[in-house]
Length: 265
Ligand SMILES: Nc1ncnc2c1ncn2[C@@H]1O[C@H](COP(=O)(O)OP(=O)(O)O)[C@@H](O)[C@H]1O
Ligand SMILES: [Mg+2]
Image (cartoon, rainbow, N blue to C red; front, side):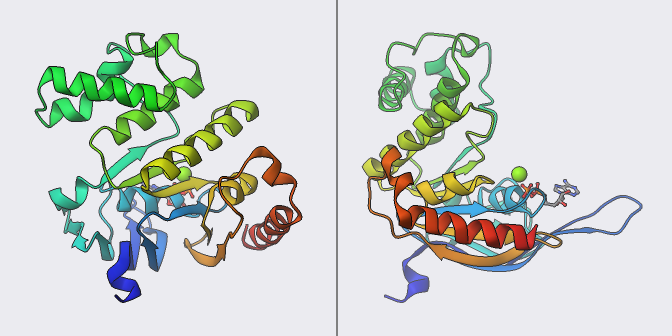
């Protein structure tokens, strides 16, 4: 099988220009080619404004590209501004803010994608409860979002993204608003979920150590206009643990990425 055929996500010549009323268009992302294999953990790293969110939103079916093609499991995601429903079904998205509905319990937030798909109530709640357990929220299923910590709300957001059993999980700075300790715990949690489920993950961050800790490959983006600066394979053994960060190889990757990030910022 060719590399292209094995790719789970394939970007060819994908670009984005934002029309700005009364001004020149913003060229947020210039023509980008990237292929991500099934089961890969890919991290997008780059300075603020380099187009990370724009790229993730296009892959997530939330923002139509201005040009190029995005293929998900071989299916073209976008046709003009409309999306292929089969391709869309393979995608689950997590944002920086959990975006839970405050008037729904945790389990009913997690079950929401299934409710929208018409899954019967008993079945969707059973699935939501199993998902809550799998992300460490056992015992909190009936609580309200406001009763949970920030880290727990992000766990719920991850469970909701997994509810429809998508093959691909997209996360945009999911732990950016959390304190350092919680963030480290959540990184371990994401690695565990990824290793257990074999999902394909794209995670956006501007933290170098988070990128090195999680990624199979780090794609470094540079701004004005956004483009791929370089791709870095991170070959550290799994599962990675807090001790991994003390390895010289870990620190070498951090050093290389820091130097590149400073050069493009
Ligand atoms: N809706 C929009 N309209 C105009 N410009 C936008 C819009 N969204 C993003 N941009 C611009 O596109 C560029 C990339 O933004 P973004 O993808 O949010 O970057 P990042 O997530 O890496 O910080 C920035 O210059 C930003 O100002
Ligand atoms: Mg962003």
